[in-house]
Length: 531
Ligand SMILES: Nc1ncnc2c1ncn2[C@@H]1O[C@H](COP(=O)(O)OP(=O)(O)OP(=O)(O)O)[C@@H](O)[C@H]1O
Image (cartoon, rainbow, N blue to C red; front, side, top):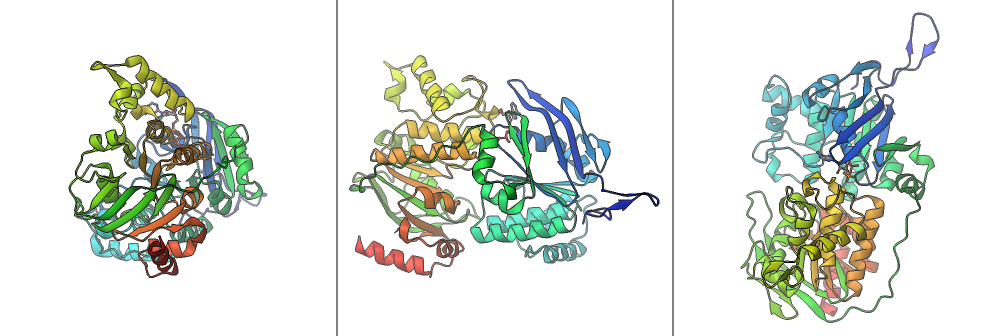
């Protein structure tokens, strides 16, 4: 895959055997943004065929470093060597020609085109579809990435789309593949098969840079890790010889606090009751909701597991009020909110934080303090019709402090925050509004281990104060940790929720793949009948 020198040892004349040059070496990379030094003298060494993790807290500078390597950001200082030669890629196309491939968190594929058509668009010289389809099938077979080149992207699951992205990158014959948080959207089974693919690639000599907040995955997959904190390298280690806790310590510079166990009380009366909610999807490739029913009691967190694209977005739209008047009811304390818009629902105590943080949960160009205002209740932020500026700034400051949001001050635009920091801000804002019921999607998506803990703790505390909380997430581990009961959404249908203690990971994983005739689902039905 990565050329003849990959993974081999080279000889020079008849002299001693020399190790091959590093695939990639960075020396003293520095990148400065107006309010922050994102990379501050970063060194990185990646050998051929090495799976190398980049870990660090939100805002530590991981994405910036990847952008430098992929020609999307110009460093202010430092040098980059590729197979021992100095290079300065100025665009992604240049980086690709050099041999760097990148698979992004957010896929850039056209729904209406087939796999082969999408891939053809990305390759130089617009290759013919027939021979290209054969090459796709060949790469797919070699690396265990089953994909039909004639299928339309719109009909594919997220895991399948990721395979297409990986195949697209592999067809450019990369010597280094950058994967940015690749498992956040996958079922446990899909994560396993992704790891098989990556190990095969590495065995063929392709180096992999693997960005992740999931330290257990890093330990299972990677043979080396570079740890960043506040733009600097704070450690290089072999993750297999570390524990998740010891790596977290290098990332944070302190021990990770444990989730504080709360003095739990039994949940109270039903507070949020969703009954036979159906909704068509606005998106031709979306998933319609079919008679979704769920009862969440006061003082309870119900997790909704599922692979993205199975109706989660439609469920969130229906619960947040972004789409109204569906058949079915959404009752909060007995009052039906199904025909009310988001503001009215919020006023009555039902808050939500959709997944698309920059598009729908925050205004990227507005400063943080104005973003704090977006979903605040009017009573807290206005007096006699005037905005209470000091109160709003104080509310924004509280979010930043309690949730450890790293930003260039309250006047920094939301769009300048790193992905994880924006996430902390949006979720923190909703929790601190103290709603009676809260629906969140992927609450810790892209946030580091320390911040994930803070967010989970805050959700648990909200629950313990008597709120009804629904967490829609693709991360089964997280749902198993924080939910009192778990339901699975697949194909727009929701299984009844079963108590966490009775949840079996494998059965949930299967139900997530659309196989609802599992023991877990039968158990749920029995339990629901008993309620
Ligand atoms: N285009 C930009 N303009 C201004 N500041 C930026 C820009 N891009 C990144 N930053 C800042 O640079 C720092 C590093 O951000 P970066 O996205 O590299 O972090 P990260 O480690 O990838 O974080 P996360 O885990 O949250 O994705 C952050 O403080 C961020 O706010």
